[in-house]
Structures are given as C-alpha cells and as structure tokens.
Amino acid sequence: MNKGTKFFLVCVVSVLFAAVYIWYALSRSTRPFQDVALPPVSIISDVSSERETFIPERPGKSDARSQSKGRMDVLDGSVMRHGEKLALPQDAGRVKQPLKVLVRHLGLDQSFGFLAMDSSHRDPGGRYATNLTCHRVHFAGGRGVCLVVERGFFTTYKAVLFNEVFYSTFTLPLNGIPSRTRVSRDGRHAAITVFVSGHSYSEGRFATETSIVDMETGTVLVANLEEFDVIRDGELFSVLDFNFWGVTFMKDSDRFYATLSTNGVFFLVEGNIASRQAYVIRAGVECPSLSPDETRIAFKKRLSTGARVGWRLSVVNLETFREMELTESRSVDDQVEWLDNSRVLYGLPDKVGSATSNVWVVSADGTGAPEMFLEDAVSPAVVREGDMPLS
Image (cartoon, rainbow, N blue to C red; front, side, top):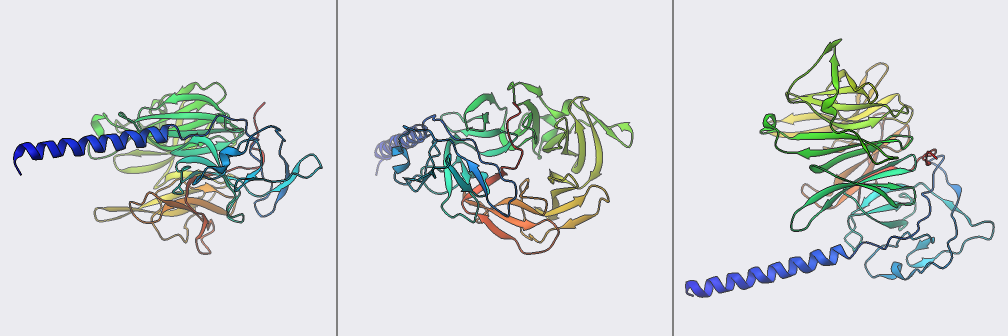
C-alpha cells in the first residue's frame, strides 16, 4: 500500500469518526426534556417512616414523553411510574411519599447524567428524571445547584441555580472543572468549588476556586474564599498557595466550615461571610460535612502509601474533637451527605476508572457494615423537613 492510499484511508476514517461524533453530540443536545411544570419536591419528617404529602394535580399534561424507550419516567407534574399515571385518591390528591433524595443519574440509558429524584432504596424503580443535567448537585431550603459540564467543540462549565420545581432561575459561568457544591440550610447561600489552572504556585498540585453565591439574586457574593483573612492561633495567617474547598454551611448561613490547604497540609476552618474571615480549627480534615444537629463533622482523612493517596471516612466531635474512623474501609473521594444524625451517604465507583457509581450508606458511630443505598447514582442530596422556600 503506497503513501497516497494510506493517506486517503486515514482521511476517510477521520471523516467518519467526525461524523459519528457530531451525530452523537447532536443527539445528546436534543435529548433534555422539555421545560415543563413540575410538582414541588416532597419533604420528609423522619427517614424511617413515610408521610402523606400533597401532590398538586395538573390536568391536561401529556404522559407521552415518559413512554420513550430506554428513558426513565419524566417528572412532569403528573405522578408517573413506568409510563403509567398513578390514580390519585379523591381526598385532595394525597398519596404516601417515602424519603426523597436528589442524585445524578448514572444508569446506562437516555437519562444518563440528568438530575433525578429517587424515592429511596425501599422503593425500587421509583426514580424520576428532571430536565436538568448535572455533574454535581445539592439542594436545601427549596433551592438547588447543578454544576454542569457541556462538551462540544470546546468544553465549558456552568452552574445552574434552580428552585423547588426544578426550574432554572440563574445560570453562572464557571472558571474551571466542577468539583463540589453545597447549599445552606435556608437556601440563601451556595458554595461552588472548581479546579482551575494558571496558578504559578500549583505546579504538580491542583488549585481550586471556591465562590459563594446569593441564591435569591444569583449574584456572586465572594468570588474566591482566598479573599478572606485567615486567623491561626490569634494571628493573621497568609500563604501564597491557599486553596479552599468542601464548604458545609451551619444553620446560620453566614457561617460555614471548609478545608484550607497549604503546603501539603489540610486544615479545617470556620468562616464567616459577613466578616470575610476564617479561623483555623485543626489539621487533617478534608471535605467536611456538618451533621444536621451540628455536633459532628464527617470528613475524609488522607492516607498515603508511597505515591498512592487514599482517604478514610471519619467523624470528629466538635465539642471534644474526638476523632473516629467509620467502618467503610474503601477509599472514598467524596464530600459525604448526612442521611440523618446517625448515617452518612457517599458515592463510590464500581471500580477504579469506572463511569458508573453507586451511593452507599454507613453508620456515623463507627459500627455496622456499609450498605448500598442507591444504584447507578452519585452526588446524593437528601430532601429534608424544613427545606422549603424562604418566601
């Protein structure tokens, strides 16, 4: 085969590859569901029981979209399951609703990557897709954040703020690859962390940018937590290579905990948005997550074995600072979500490098064995009692 023939074959293969890629990209871009009226997310009062929740009737909605082959049911204002509309009782449309968890759906179907609402592991098949795509998600106080990766000729990143009926309220461009996000208990503030490049001090290490957003107005209150004054042992602590991530808000949404990394050391800090200050509390804490009763922080503790880095889920008591490892022995690179005051949720891939992950649950007191909680899902956000709009 001469060089001309080889060149021709390479060109043909390249054109075919480009055509397939364009077809795939276009098919994905037309895949999101129509912007439709959705019922408010149901809240729960106790994760160990069910409660009656009012679901508003919206007559005249077509359920044809939920018949699409290979796609989970679409949450569209009707109560749907497997393409069939459930009959609502005559008493004002009240039906029993179990625990609700928002997740990024990872099932290998046309809803892959979409934000979905799952009615928990006790109700197999009770997962419903929304019209939002997410890389990471969190929700509280009737407001949520989806961190979105848009792949095209150029890959771009954005944060979509949404309300309790999954309507987009604001869209914010992001400066890097989405990493973590958290919404305050009252839905007033959100924290967004992305990986960024271009920092001269970050050679060989990652750099982050963590911003604070006003969820009501969509404005960025803090462009980067590196703007804060950091106090350590009563003195100003300032180093060039500060990186913040893993924000977790207190009930007072002006206050939060986060990780501060500098020179290979990871500190737990307590921050205040109004004063633009953060105080170093202790070392050795990454990706903190505050318990609902605000007595403990779950986090991942860094374990190094030679060139390899792993993490062990642990909990620290904020009064005694007693630290305890959980029974999950696998390396968990995630910011956990508290299911309640006694259990935590976290995502784990099926295997290293796998695109499919599952949500697991383990006791926060160092007892019991981990159990799979939700299949084909990641980034769980529990819908709690009191997670209602501010207005």
